[in-house]
Image 1 (cartoon, rainbow, N blue to C red):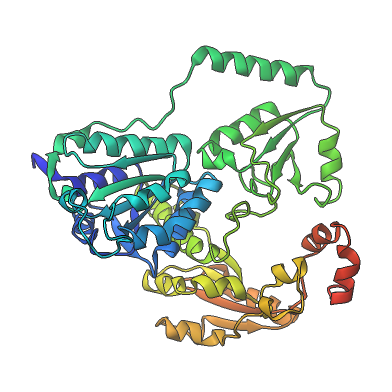
Image 2: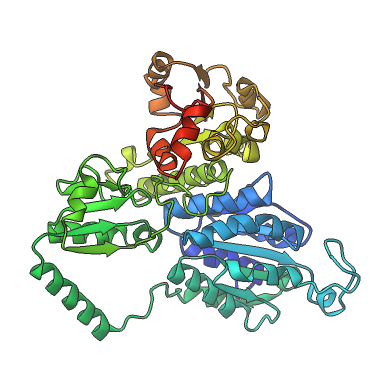
Length: 479
């Protein structure tokens, strides 16, 4: 094979850097180059209910696997639908590649009145301008001679900057051919390093730590986003200093580590954690994201905070875990029988309503997350902020026992549980199928509409005038 289509070149390149799943929604300006996915051994297509969900799923996939999540949409309506998910990935520095199938180059040149246009003299690239601030690089492909190098460039930028990039691919260009030999040159995914500057920085850090009376290490989420988890763990072991984490940085350092102190939540951290860190005279900070809402845990979108994100992200997480476990098994890793792990999704009834369709994709793909639906009759997070008893914080009541039959789950009767007390919850958690699930599980957890976590209560109560207001609204006495 001396030549391949540009469409196949794109998918082969993505597969070479560790991407095994392409997410998205088919549309008339990407259909033909979606065909080439099936020509790449080991690469699969997973379709989503809509483009926003696909972008969320790509985000979740990237967070778990450490390679870009890839989402494919069609020109105009599809790419705009995905934009909110791309913006969230940009906000939290997650690697996502958005491939947009565009109209043909002739259509663009002639400004043809093609569906999805928004004027009578359409600029077919108007939509690409709308996403400009949500990406760090783009390849607006129009020349077959430069297209492969442009694809390579933006893939590299996605890794280096750990933020979304776009590839705009006209439908006709995807079918033109390029030399297959181009694939034999590996992509360079590491940043250029100024060795002298690096050495000087390391010397300065070590000097500060040696001179300190009570030094420590603080680990945050950007350590993981920039694929430095292994290095951070090795550094913690080598330094032998007390180590703290943000909640967005949880699990980067094993919380059973002898020197792990705790996760920092300001004054609302576990007792003694903030005080202990406050006594440090030098803190080595790794991958800091100093946002006001850095209070989530594990895989969580706590900075951008787009409601509905978690369900598609859990799908992406499951696909990534599946691929990582399969890779370890192929490599004969001694960890392979234990490598899979679980995806535990905790989602409120309000949030679930936005992206519930992806439960169907989970069933279709045979994934096996455990989904805890917090049924508290509406947007309780909004109730505690404002308007606890106003109807705008209510949501439509659903019968969640019908979700699994609706999505054609193979065992709906045994994979759904409804619990309304601590005793019932503990009984459900003791079920071996939740500990090592073989298919999607749902646990509906019925809670009071004003029942909130104590830490959230304290955060809101600290705002001027909110303490008395919360008491009047009924948030206290829920123990």
